[in-house]
Image 1 (tube, rainbow, N blue to C red):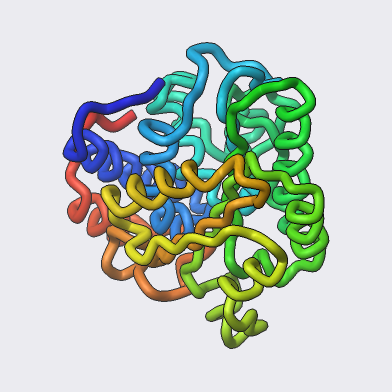
Image 2: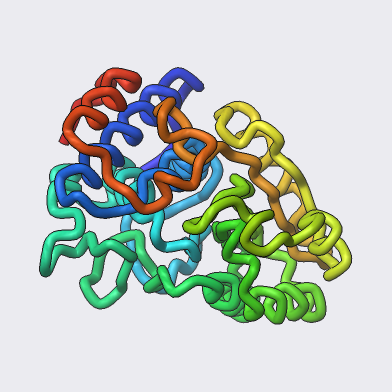
Length: 284
């Protein structure tokens, strides 16, 4: 399911995943391309280089690293990367957001989709779940890590801060929580909707070790930053990575705007987006 030999292979996968995202959302005229495109490099790096995973999937995840997606609306990138990592057939991407599909608009667990361990989309809850899983790993004497991803706008919800306080208070040091800092949410920029101030200083004040990846859409920068984050685990503090991304990255007219948070491209826009991301590994 993982370990590609060079950066070019990862870059090729990034391009293909972008195509998957665009085509999935376009087909059903529904979904969230902006944040998905912005996090494509992160997901590709995480599932193909960073995490240690087993060849077969089970919900317990004992003896392997596990991941929780908190901002579940970016399911297109999640599904694409899971499929292309071998969790389920790539051609199942064709069923995205169709009634009775396992690939619902927001990930669910009742359909038994391999790779998904939490129903997400109701924002603000993923941090609590990830912390519970991290503590379970400690109780099971499992030295593997728990990873999670959260939107920056999602941090406006209070449950996160209870969990963030809990993590440091209980010394949950086997978790790496990544915050997608793209500065955009459904109604506009995060600063316009509800300014959060200095997120780095906030996490540090809550007792976390904080790292920043300034180039959150650069594969090599992500690999370097996440490797460093792994080296900071096991030291009595939870670890936070601030990933600075561009919403809609890779499709020029979708970049740097909240307009494509939850909007599907039409036929002409799809063609433009696909032309900017040539097929590399074969469309589903």
